[in-house]
Length: 304
Image (cartoon, rainbow, N blue to C red; front, side, top):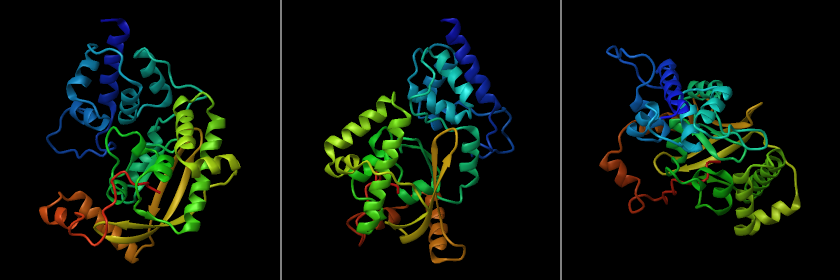
């Protein structure tokens, strides 16, 4: 066991102990005595096994992937400097200028958690989903675990299955143009990002529409918008859509909201209750394609 492996384990344990479970959205009962987060809670949120996290903390596991480290950094609420230190201890280059940084800062994480009553998601500069609120997942459908394409908005828009969001032809053209313009600007800001370059190359090769828009070299900006969503359980919902850019982190926070007291707000309230309840046999049957009057969209449907 190397000194760096021992230090990696020590830092992971220290960072885990300092996180407030309440801030992480974990209910804290009166019998909870240990400070910070339990291994099981961190492992579940980071998408790794408890055994693997235990081995990391004990310095018995080498070479964790950048994806695992990024997930741990988000759950442990590391600052950008701490995240870079984590990468270096694991023997990896720290994220640097010229590549897209998907790290969700503690401030952004707190902001998303304070907005749990709204469908909220955070995307990086590639428009890849980084994190989302439970209500977002209930509204849009959670992406399949491990499917990178299912988390990338441009890929879903141009090559994915039909989405829950309903667009008129004009709205569709506007959305496509805005997404292509965003990727073009991101490619200029992050010339060394191989994942971004591969995304653009793949879209140009497989989507004639994307290739056409890319060649136009248009520049557009995101503005406030309204989205109509066909949900398999609560029906049609029309919501305001706002895109907030996090300065310095180049993250996009996408939030849906409805006017208080409106039918759309009531539909969101119902969806919030449904999303927190277990799926009963009646609900499962009602939402199945054989029983519903609507086609149930693929869970990887484009989120905007």
